[in-house]
Length: 331
Ligand SMILES: O=c1[nH]cnc2c1ncn2[C@@H]1O[C@H](CO)[C@@H](O)[C@H]1O
Ligand SMILES: [Zn+2]
Image (tube, rainbow, N blue to C red):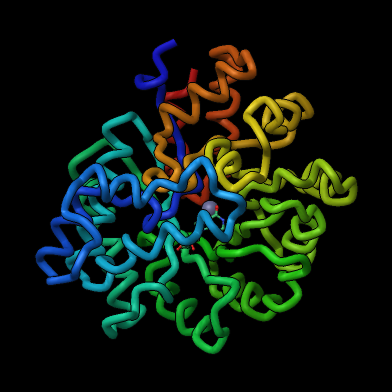
């Protein structure tokens, strides 16, 4: 099967984990930021999470370098444009990209400037290529909470105009959802969709909490509902979208190897799974690669692929018009 040509939908991809290595070099030069090396291969290898990565925390250390050049409006706009361009060129037709506005204030940008820059970059790509998109605002779970509502307020102006959802990301501790109830509620009241990273690092209860306490409509990863019947049943009953990211899960040791990934078992049990990249640079992947890996490892057919494509449309935080457009590519 020609995986490159298949129409694809990516609902879980981080902007800062998906920066082109050459862009890091260019922007560092423009902004006089010292880099550990000027060699593109060296920069590339500093950005990719190594095989020896032991957990999510080690994986997350790869984000400091790209974030150092994502502190100006022009830099953020360019990186956003390039990510949508890269995705469009491998036939991603709809793309939801997430990022943490709190991570882009090292040089004093306001949340409005930051969010407006990512949206501008996306819109520039939408005008040039056959791709549609939306942004998801990720709050870092380990950061102080005093500016979360300010992020939500700044993003609310862009709802329906490039921003669609609220997310929690970063290191995953058991029981984290309890601390975020008022923020998720506020985001929902403002009109955000809700997706939450949960059940990535072993704790199925976190998925249960994300759905029951935070009103999550989708969860990032969610694979550890396998060990928690209550969470599994809740996901099934409420048709909660599971944003699976197979390569990332292997790097962070969420699963030991692809054959042990529950994506196929979930699919066979009619759970709404989607296939996504998580971090194109840090996980050294593309949608073409993720789709190929899953389909070949689990012997999925073309019909299975288009079933998953349609699940992704159903789970997308997109307008009805965009969903209809995406249905044109379905078989
Ligand atoms: O797989 C993941 N699980 C949890 N957090 C993540 C993952 N990938 C990236 N980030 C976190 O999200 C922030 C905003 O994009 C990144 O800076 C990183 O800390
Ligand atoms: Zn993620």
